Amino acid sequence: MASGFDTTPEQQAGQLHFLKSQILETKAPVLTRKDADLSGQTAIITGGNVGVGLEAASQLLQLGVSKLILAVRNEQSGQAAAKSLLVSRKDGPQKVEVWKLNLSEYASVMAFAERVGKLEARPDIVLLNAGIICAKPTFNPLTGHDEDVQTNYLSTVLLLILLLPILKAKPSAAIAAKNPVPHISVVSSVLAHWSKFDERSADPLLPAFDAKPTSNWNMEERYSASKLLALIFCSELARRIPREVAIINAPTPGLTYGSSFMRQTAGTVLGFIIGIYYRIFGHGTNVGASQVLAAAVRAGPESHGQFLENGKLRP
Image 1: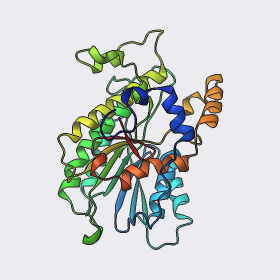
Image 2 (image 1 turned 180 degrees about the vertical axis):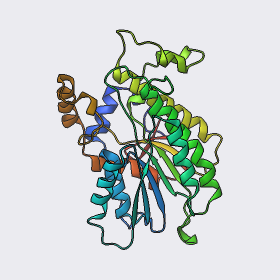
Image 3 (image 1 turned 120 degrees about the horizontal axis):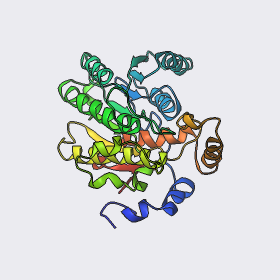
């Protein structure tokens, strides 16, 4: 068993561990202001208008974050989310802003990062939550890449790279006594551990995902592989970025119902079956969000470059 872990990589990748994690393990609790006071801090959440992202936004506001940026593809949906988040807030002036971010377009990613660079204070918390799972083979019309790989890996890590110099160069708006080390949490999935990753031997690697699909194409495997690529990237990046610059980690919310994540299967027999499975073994978005925020808010330097599940470091 690896040092610091309570399970082995082989166990982590198994169905038995998954069921134990979902049903039996104690989850990281929803944080309170006694656990973390985020007053003065700025946070960014990609995909913050629905599901786990929206719930995480609500929990961040409860922790007192002063400025929250919802990075969304659909600005109308983002504005509705921002309105719902602020309607019950009575704890003083808190700003929720909606910024356009389309992870299918590199130009949108770069424009978003440039806008972040114009802020007076750096973001203290960056939650790279937006993701996609395609129910059928889908390729990005601008890049030609598989859309799961494009969104969950390529564009996500591009945004991560572009934000790092900003986090390093700018001060926090939090008072000096609470000056935090920035956290960047790339939302992952236990499915990353389940990927067969048949493309691993391809050289170069990316074209192997862009090849014309065969009858063996599997939506779960493609999503799993895209999440594995992001997990590998974060682990390797953490070797090169000092944890004093930013703590980079990869938490999983676990299997979560009540989000629009599987929206592409809505109205289908497959979608009906998946919905039942999620209800039996999943938990609500409030629980999923608290697992993510345990990493994005509370996890220390020991989590740098690590995968986290239920608030614990896992292989």
